[in-house]
Amino acid sequence: MRIPFMIAVAAGLLAAGGAQAASKTPQERLARAIEGRVAGKPVDCINLRDIQSSEIIDRKAILYRVGRTLYVNTPDSGANFLNNGDILVTDTHSSQLCSIDIVRLVDSSSRMPSGSVGLGKFVPYTKPAS
Image 1 (cartoon, rainbow, N blue to C red):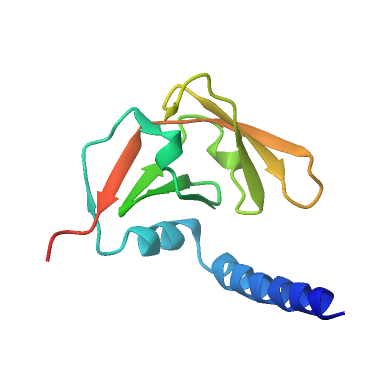
Image 2: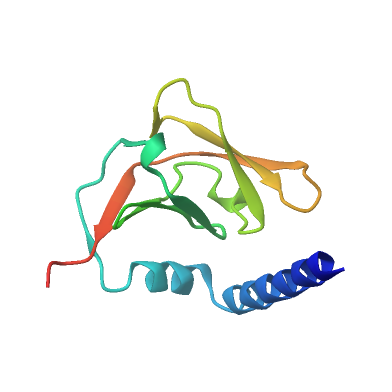
């Protein structure tokens, strides 16, 4: 009985956080994510094994966290399919995620395909040295 309760509480907290995130525009969410960071030179690829997390900014971008660096990928095509409730599905044939790759999107509720995006270059954002 205790586990279902904990799951329900966790789901409620996630929904509350999602509601807050949904109240901000995609531009505001992206600006908040890179606040206090400096953009570096765009790169074509990042190592898959180094990616710690990813986050979708609705209809705008995908953020990849690699150590202390946040890589922002603004897709070259299909950005209109990006929805923060989607799951990113990558099918690469190397150890890297690159700007020529296509990422499929799957709706997290229905588990149905919801689109795909053609990745662009990865722009690294780092915090300046203190």
